[in-house]
Length: 390
Ligand code: SAH
Image (cartoon, rainbow, N blue to C red; front, side):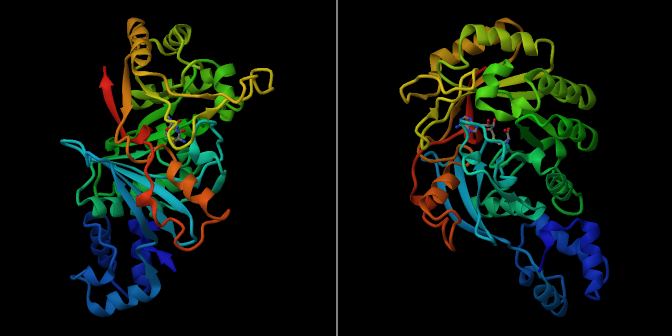
């Protein structure tokens, strides 16, 4: 059965025509879906009942099942868990701000990038999400939180540039002026640095903001926590970001998870500043979120062997040291902010809740495997962070 949220407006026109309807019905339906967030054909009151019946028989609208929500104590941030039709768990986060709410969505069920500190990749990639599964995260998050979103960040589970075609279609659909008419400038895509696709993004969706997860200023260090570095080195990634800035005239963001004793020394701040100096960018410094995961295990050393750490685990850098790192960057002309995880009472770092669900169940979640998410209480992460300074 076709999921209408997977279709462009043009494809939807073709589909409704195949059911014997006039093409203008597609615009009406699209308006209900994206404009009003309606996922029930019977609520589309300007579509005749007979047509609704035919749609109901041939198409689906709600292919995600809400499977739990947990709000931070201050109510500012809500983490939502959804179950897909084939039993995968995915996560979205709704963040309330004074003048602009923001929704962080997943682009894949799992991830194959294998970043050592990130819970999303711990079990590998299950599958790509469809454009409709991305759109429904926004629609259902807004419904659950009773508010509209102005910004969308592709920073949940998955690597968006590893699922580029679906991500692009989602962005095109949600920014279509017949539906939601959201501004592409209000969308930010975060990548671990898939260089050729950064260039494609700049060429094809130039209004979309780019965030790059850098996390280390050199290949040796970055290679220990981000295997993707072996394919595209730090300099290649920064050069791709620079080309993106040049082509789009938009400021790039670099994410840098501060890991105590690993990448937070003054020399590393200097190296990072040297790498980024002169580039129109902002560095987001986010102390590593380890709650719920027990800390990042020490990874292989530069020689390929595990370092002798007696089982020690890395932790997030403390606030004072994070501020010193920021100041060191600022003194060298590189703008940076330190972000503090919001809602420390819920678990929202990338993929943490999903990982817990998957570990608790079988290798594949059974029906209802996502249930009970609201009872989990743990940490919070990158996708609900608050500026502390800068
Ligand atoms: N794959 C994309 C987007 C998903 S992750 C990317 O790599 O950018 C979104 C951000 O959260 C990335 O910067 C990622 O490195 C960061 N992240 C993941 N787990 C984290 C953790 N435990 N603590 C801090 N940041 C984390």
